[in-house]
Length: 308
Image (cartoon, rainbow, N blue to C red; front, side, top):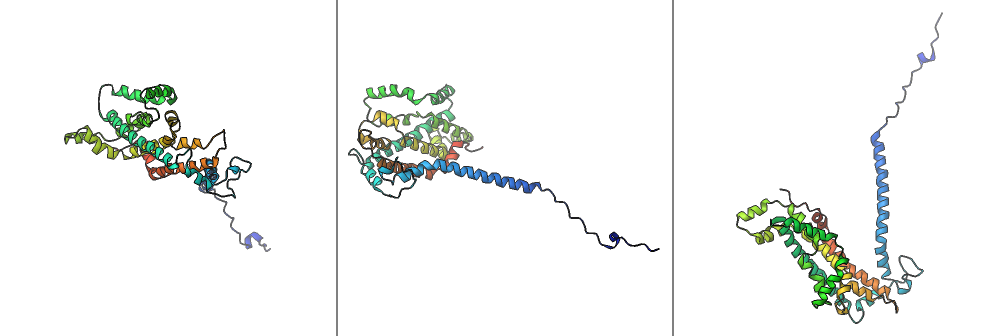
């Protein structure tokens, strides 16, 4: 009796396909890409929201007055014109725009020079000189940061009025030369405290005094903090509106923020187009000043200094 071969004995068996292997790295990479895409979309949306007012201001500076604030809310107008800039450059109230720019430049440059000099000297005294009551005076200076400016407006105005300094630039600049901005003093103090004390000791061994140590050693090393102070002081002074509004009465002495106010007269027709055009021109010096020195801001605010 012969035995018949079964199909499994004569036919070759095919190997089973391997089961898919789970790769956590590929899933992790996909999740990271999705998160990165969502992050960039949200970031671009926020950037668009932040930049839209600036884009609207630039576009409105080229629109006629009839299209500013009217029913036509389009970002760009078909009636492109530079008449607003021509009107803005002519000035207002018999005062040229160049005069307003010059006044703002005087105040801004004076604020930068006064703040850098007074804050750096005061910071050196607090950071490097041991004198009785140093901690108390430093704490009192920091406490002035909690005092709102509006609290001292009336007393300061009375003092300057009695001294006959109203309608001059002295009330706007004298505080800059007296280290009245505690924020900048604190910034430089923290930066100086990060500098090695061995530098001072080596200079004293060579016979250097405080003046030489401050001028030859500290100032060159404080370049990031000095530039950061200059940037913020320039911007804050250039954009200051309340101070000049309080102390200046003559239009020939007005800076740009007050000059912009002259274009808006609710009793007559207001030239909003020229006001916006002058606003764009007023932003240019601040933008250029910021772009030139922006790389020093983070380095200066970090106040890390050198490590010994």
